[in-house]
Structure formats: structure tokens, C-alpha cells
Length: 351
Image 1: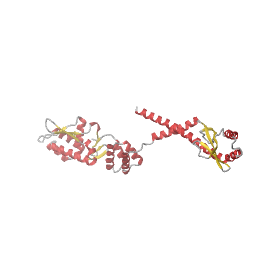
Image 2: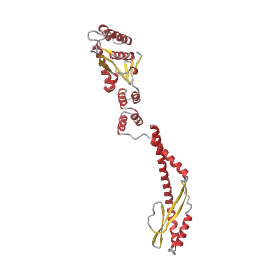
Image 3: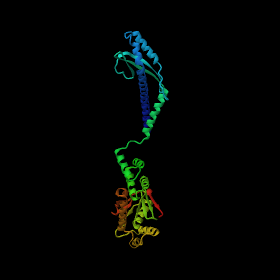
Image 4: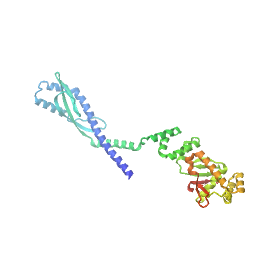
């Protein structure tokens, strides 16, 4: 419906412009012809009129005869040019003997003298136009103008102009800056800025990161996570705890209840030990889990380390969606935690 409205608007604009251009073209063609004819007549006609009228100024028959002769001579005026919009014109004598005064619009004034008395003859043009050619050329001109209006980018708002200026300062070309300012949301621009800071100023890579969907990717080979396309390096033990929580998220709802202070979680410890042994975790962390089990204190410490690293790399606003959410367990009074992100965006590589 909106698209149809836009099309109707463009059609109406094209029609109005076409009619306006046709009216302007006819006025301009007639004006140009009138100016040319006026210049020619002012060079040759005054002397002939003066001689014809000098002796018998009061003879109406002679005045009528002169007017008729003029109209006969100016009956068929054909403009010259490669693309004539006017087929031909004729001139009518509207005033033969008048005191000199400015000609009304559209008229041709020929000034001459009888003795020392100034006189003027006024002629009016009647033109026949080449309507098919006139309509075709002016409609095409209107169509080109409408196409330019549609295809040219809209004028920049104050906010968009300021955003483009900021992007230019970040190293983007003018074309890239204009495209990015229109295609990226404010939130995506935040990711673009952060990616640019993290990748050493690679604008192309930053654009890819900004435009991608939400994603959390784990790479055990490099012990780093890629958050929304931005690489974040973690220490070994926090990395494996983060990965462990991500696996829990993929396996179910992801919630993990902190164990009681006096009763460590042995099953959770065994799961983490297996992961760390398989991926080359620190021996100290593995031995601590074997000896003491998985304690609430250890979980809290590693979640805090993960939080600190992600906020340091991404800023608090961007990191928040990839951290942990918590809620109090009504039965035990203890807190349980899980990754805030949906399992669908979690991707685990080489682990």
C-alpha cells in the first residue's frame, strides 16, 4: 500500500512537471521568436512606415492598407533550428499609429518617427506548436527530473551529518561513511566503534562485526571468545568456566545453583575436570577441583573474572548481554546463574 502511494505520488509529480515544462517551453519559444522578429523589424520597418504614412496621416484607408500589407508579409513566420517546437507563427497588427509606449507582454513593438514625432506599431504573435514533439521532449525532461529526485540520496539530517563526520574521523571514505550512517543502527555503531578499537583500525573488519547478528563463539585452540565478531582473550581458567556455562546453556535452560558453603558440588567438579584435562587446563585449577570440589566461592570468582574481562574489552553496555543473569532459588535461598544469551547464538569451535 505504501509503495503504491509512493508510485502515485511520483506519477502525479511527473504529470505536473510535464505540464509546467510544456507551458514554460511554449512561452520561451514564443518570447524568443518575438525578440528575433522585433530586432529584424526595428531595422527595416520604421523607414518604410514613415515613408508610407508621411504624406497622408489622416487617411484611414491608407492606414488599413498598410496594416493589411504588414499582416500579409508576416502571415507565415517559420522559426529556424534543429528541433523546432513551433511549427509557424503569424503576426497581427494591433496598433499602427500610436504614441510610443512600452509594448504589452507578448507584443512586438516597432518604433519609428514621423518627422520629429515618435510613433510605434504593435504586433501580436499567434503561433502553432509542434505538440507531439513538445509533449515528448518536456515529458522526458520531467521524467529525468523525477528519476533524479528518486535516485539521489535524501538530504542529510543534523544527526546523520554528525554521524557521518564521526565516521570520517574513524577512517571511512565519504561513500562508506554515508552508507554506514544509513544502514547501521545506533547499537550497531557502538559495536563498530568497539571493533575498530580492538582490531587496530581495520574499518572493513569492524563493519563486518557491527553488521553481524548476535553471536558468542568459543575457540579452544586460541583460548579466546569472539563476541559479536570481536575477539576477547581470556585467561585459561576463566575461559573454561565460561565455556562450561555455555555448554550448560546448550544442554538445557542453563541454570546452575551455587552449591552450599559446606557441601561442594562434586558432579560439577568432575565435569569441569574432564573439560580442563581434555583442553589443557591449569594443573593447579584441576587439583583444586579434585581436592575441594566445585565451591560457590570458586564459581563467583571466575564469573567475576569473566565479567571484568568482557567489560574491559567491550564496555559495560555491550558486554551485558553476554554475561550472566541470576535469580534467587526460593527453596534454598541461594542464587543460581546462567549465561544471559540464548543457546542458539552460542557456537563452540575446536573444543
